[in-house]
Amino acid sequence: MISGKTVVLGVSGGIAAYKAVDICRRLIENGAHVVPIMTSGAKRFIGEVTLSALASEPVKSSLWEGDDPIPHTTLGQQADLILVAPATARLLGTYAAGISNDLLTATLLASRAPVVVCPAMHTEMWEHPAVQDNIRTLQNRGVFVVAPEDGKLAGGDIGKGRLASTQSIVSTVERALFPNDLEELKILITAGGTREPIDPVRFITNRSSGKQGYALAEAAVARGATVTLVTTVDRPAPTGVEVLYAETANDLRSVVMSCAENHDVIIMAAAVADFKPSSTANRKLKKSALSTNLELEPTHDFLVDLGAGKLPHQTIVGFAAETEELEKNAIGKLKGKNLDLIVANDVSAPNTGFAHDTNEVLLLSDGDKREVPLSTKRVIADSIFDVVLDLRKNK
Ligand SMILES: Cc1cc2nc3c(=O)[nH]c(=O)nc-3n(C[C@H](O)[C@H](O)[C@H](O)COP(=O)(O)O)c2cc1C
Image (cartoon, rainbow, N blue to C red):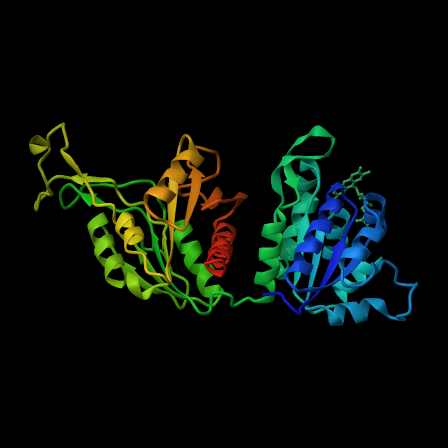
């Protein structure tokens, strides 16, 4: 997708600078023209020769040396995209403040191209309010931020701050270059928890708020898709989305099955009840008539039907909300239901899952696993679509 695009690759001075070599290689393999800029900090961590040899042009690092009398405007205007990986706290702060004191920050300010920054630093630095304020400022200006991941850090520490994977960084570069990357697709998304009535006033339900399904719908329309949202909750839907309502697992099944074949991507984010009352009273049951034992029967798992009847043009995504053995259980569902992707989350972990605005998920497909660290549900939604696009490219 990025073939022929000029990507200015800014590398700043953190331990993760060595990973810029892999990112550069991946961009070159995908056909991009990569122009590397290193800060003086970056040169303390990796040799200029390595990047010069792998990139499309030799490394640039000075405003004052070289043949071009105004290098920052040339680079800023040539760039189809500027990627900074890794981005130090210093680089983020300087860029957010609009200060240009080296070639990289001057190029960032002298460009109208989309910008992707990939912070990497120790957890204490990443969580510092000044750094977080700078991140928000940049995001509000439309800069794409690829959040760092949890894991091993320099000096043996463990925590958040590791540079995101090359795969996530390259996917974000593609999205920044092609904002309408879902334009060709018809996407069906389900959202919310189903309600299984006992009588006209009582029902069985679950804790699903529908927030993840709505975030998926928002991301999909923003990226140009035609979206149908089948929902059990009454929340304002993003403009441009066709909204269909359902209440019970049975309703949801009939709505989804009636329009499934017209859709290229089906994402089952709704929490569909596994059981429903064996009978539903037409009138409110008197307290005295209510039994202390409620007889239940299983609902039909129509995700199995969708998987079994999957058409060649379709990609089917399921969700696995688990409280134990997350990966194992999720892989069981992925295979057992013939899905292309399963979004697994541990709903017992803090700030994740039902009703929260944030989530932390594993995206599991055949032979591939991507971790999305604690992020907003919109960021999770975009990561899901990045993987869906990769899966469809490799089909
Ligand atoms: C060993 C070592 C590792 C460092 N790692 C990081 C890092 O991962 N992230 C970061 O923001 N700063 C890190 N720093 C601090 C930066 O190198 C320092 O702020 C420097 O001025 C950044 O320069 P630059 O932004 O111009 O590249 C590290 C410093 C040292 C000595």
